[in-house]
Length: 395
Image (cartoon, rainbow, N blue to C red; front, top):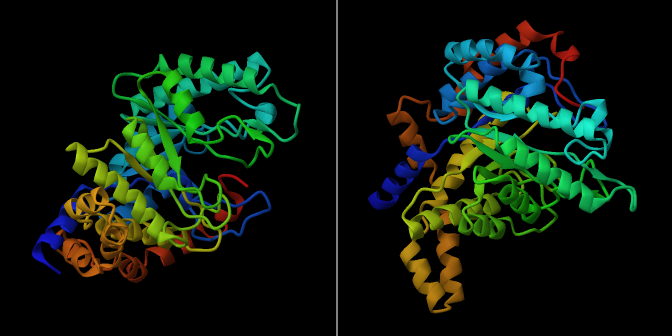
């Protein structure tokens, strides 16, 4: 590989950080059930410990996304404990995720519920989440809503839109100058007739309505089949409204599969659009890269390390796109030449340079193999066996 290419890969890797999800280390499943793992984390301390392993082996995961209901059930009273655990494990609190879907009162929605009392309860929970984020020095509050309806005529869609706007504007008044609200969307599941925030356009409209500190969060699993995700990423970049990602992969719907396991070229194309934007604008895009995966079958820590390694590899490949050549080919409508610029970068084997990058920074050249040889999995399996069968984040 040319020295210039290697330099671009190193620069890209030095700038790349990706956040781990606390719930990715615990027993989770589908609405049909779950397969339990004896090594699954059962406490927030264990989640931080598992995240520490991933960060120590990869060097690029310094933060852990926290779920308020699952990780801070006492709300603000749990903040000091989280601060202590972060110092203990060398992993800082990341994005804060309110829970607006598990409480029985949310049966007919949270921000979109016809009952004002429920809407006010949901608003207070998100306000508490903003306060938690401020105390933990966490910038991003991720808002995902399961709100919607399953049958035509059972909900007033326009009224629900209005209620969402009112609550989001009220919530935005609690956000300080450093914080951001990231509005997520999902076309279906659990709402199958209409979902209140069903696509990126609705999320964009709600974020703009909320206020200047709101952005859109793109979950790569939350799209219809064959949707061109990199196109909507490009649009959000152009509008200055792309706030972050929840990375996973999917074959059919929101499958929560390991990043790049089904379509690595799509993730490459997403990274390309971001890096192309940065090259053209001369500014770094302010984007939070986060993982959102829950594994029933794969070992949880192994799957997380595998995901991080895949993300690094695809980000490195995207850094090799020759922008000048691409721009020239696009301007001359040379289709094969332009497409080949992307294909050549994607086809480049960047793994040797990544291994050198890791070694130079005191990291294992193969984080996955290093984890397997560490004995950590055997240790936590023995320590947690029996307890993990009684604990899970969601079904």
